[in-house]
Structure formats: C-alpha cells, structure tokens
Image 1 (cartoon, rainbow, N blue to C red):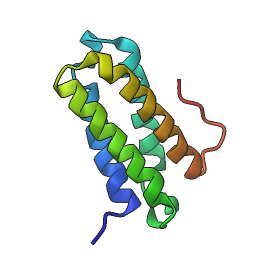
Image 2 (cartoon, rainbow, N blue to C red; image 1 turned 120 degrees about the vertical axis):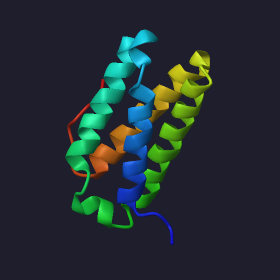
Image 3 (cartoon, rainbow, N blue to C red; image 1 turned 180 degrees about the vertical axis):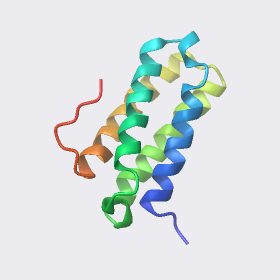
Length: 107
C-alpha cells in the first residue's frame, strides 16, 4: 500500500530532525531554516489535507528533498548541502501553502 501524505510528512519530519542534529556547528542559518520548517510541519501535521490524495505528490517531493539533504549532511558534502536545503525550503513552502497556511513565508 502506498504511503499517505501524513506518513510521508512524518518521514520528512524525522529526516529534518536528523538534519538539524549537530548542524549549528556547521551553519546556524541552515539550522534555523530547518527548525522553522519543523515548526510549520508540526502545525499542519494531522490536518485534513494530509488525508487527501492531493497531498501525496507535494509531500512526496518534500520527503525526497529531505532524504537527499540528510544524505548530503551524513556524507558531509557541504557544497551540495546548501542547494539541497534551498530545494527543501521550496518544497516545504509548497506543502505548507497547499495545507492551507497561505501567506506564511519561510526564511
């Protein structure tokens, strides 16, 4: 059975928590951005949007982007990590907007 939007969001949250661990020693701005994403994901988690099919494509993108960023962090590929974080912020913003939190901008 394919994952639901909620399950993919939860996996993305777990990935983001792993990304944040120890990140302040590398880049405080990246850590702040990921913490902001985690806060917004916490607010939208469990909402009706994630029980619907339209949540799946956008949430799958966030899950993929968070997995990619985590792999780059784990391998300490900081040159690739910066652009991966930018992509994760964009896909996260998309999911947050689709979940009904229009007007919220991540920094």
